[in-house]
Image (cartoon, rainbow, N blue to C red; front, side):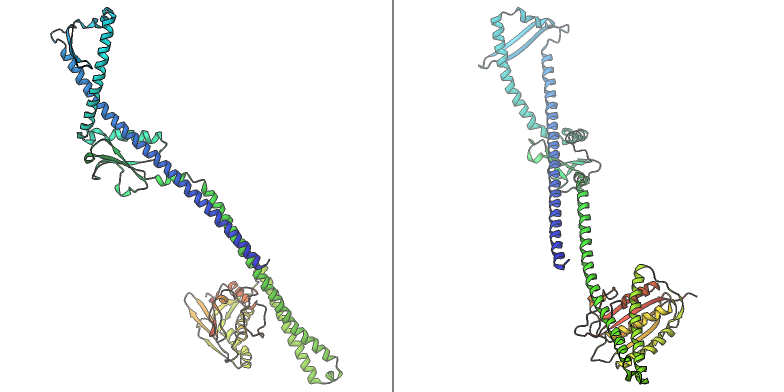
Length: 507
């Protein structure tokens, strides 16, 4: 698959997921806003009902007091000297036309209901009209009385008008009726914001505009004597969010799909990069194999020449060429097979105690001729006092050789090569090995990938750097197998330092 195709699919899927997430978020916000509005409406409706109930209680209180007073005045008009029910009853009234009259009833009050049967019909109708007129007049008086009651009721203390136990009961009942079954706290406050009384858990610091609600008590009171009830719900947020819990699985599945998609894209790019690296590897391997094969083929053709066979010096030279090229070919094949083996299983190591200082000194001595051939110099500074490590000597030697060989490959053409190998003790019973050079160095993006298989650092216009991109991958693999660590420090154009940390052998 082409890189452009992968990027196109990535953009399409990214836009799709972004749109899906936006729709889900918008839907969730709308759900939260709708639930919040419903909650607020239910609370306001409940508080209004509580306020109305308190007004009705107060009106009932005053009417009951007036009714008792009227009843008492009626009984006072009865002749107090006749306790057996016989006496007189005086009743004064005014007709709608303004006529005043007095009605006196004497006799046994227990027999009053029977009087209707003895009253003539025309007189009875006249009495009904008189009573109707009196009723209308008294109703007007009653309205005036009620108005006076309501205008004077604000003089009573708010604790008597809205008892805390009554308010608490009304609040619980109304909230339950509106489906608001969650804890609440409340307080009755005066016009200046002072708390008259409050519930046990009321905390003014927790009151905010989103969770608190205010309702004026007794709206007909003068503004200077107005009181309000404040209610807030400590668990309102949890209550609102509980209504959208069904959205959580949707978000989880969406994020799982997003993660799977991102992983798929990463794998696709990685596979494409591996494909490119393997193609480069095959090209490099073909070139590496072609050179020794061509040399061996040319030497074999020379052996067919009689004049060459008759010259011992030429035969010796051809034999040396064939032997060197065969070793070179075998070394390349073994390196490829070795990395293939490491991919399938752990390496089989023959561990033994090795003095790293002595092993590195031997390697430096052998490698010195190759460095000097390019006009360079190699310096060793083996200062570790305890340098015994448990390693496979062959693989350890190959690791050091690979790092030194890389330094030669990536040297500067216009500057003599300078190599330095050092050892030193570090804390934690570990040995540090440093291999430094003054080569072309590494860029930051290369430093992150140099230990990957098949990866080769770009060398610009240079074409003499040979290899499969397996050397440093092999080095990293072996150091990990030896329970050590390796890192690289480099600055482009200045040089590179490889640092190997190995555990010392415990006595």
